[in-house]
Image (cartoon, rainbow, N blue to C red):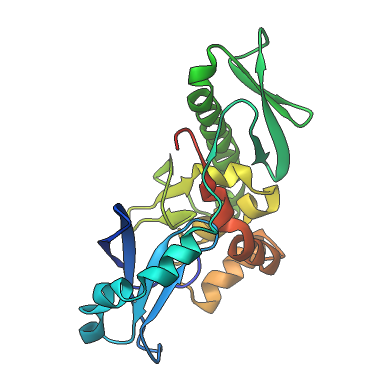
Length: 241
């Protein structure tokens, strides 16, 4: 539940040059007209309609903008495979993935390098497993640090690969986080944890809620700005292309 809640978007498929693209259809009453966008980092295509009636024609509108969408997609950087030779962010710092003949673990990080042992064909999966493990350890430790300060205790903590949210808190007091937060700087991960832990006390974004967040992290503007500017970049990294 990071930032303000928005209506859950619909998803439709659009065929361009024989390729099926998922299009997110959004409703925004404040929009003055139909708007189509292509995310310059992820290539996500979305159409925003100003009314529910307009939403029914959103996919047709996107079809009429195929040439523009095609041009934008051509400029989108491709996904980055978590394989040997790739350079990825890890805790906010660039790390090169290299093969190792031997070492202390299947995968480990050391001085700007992520070393991975074993057959190169399995390197990307092993690196992703390593990143998820590191994310779980860091996120759980930070939750256990912040929650007692608010007199709160989560029922469960899960680590996932969420499509849009960096973190969430359910009515059942379960916290969920994206493993990709381990790619971001520490102050970003810390903020997301503080945000979701604060929802254990306030399931809203009221002044009281934000007071809890600021009690845990003094600066909330810097991590919010970082996620807005660079958050989508973190979704490029994957164990498969």
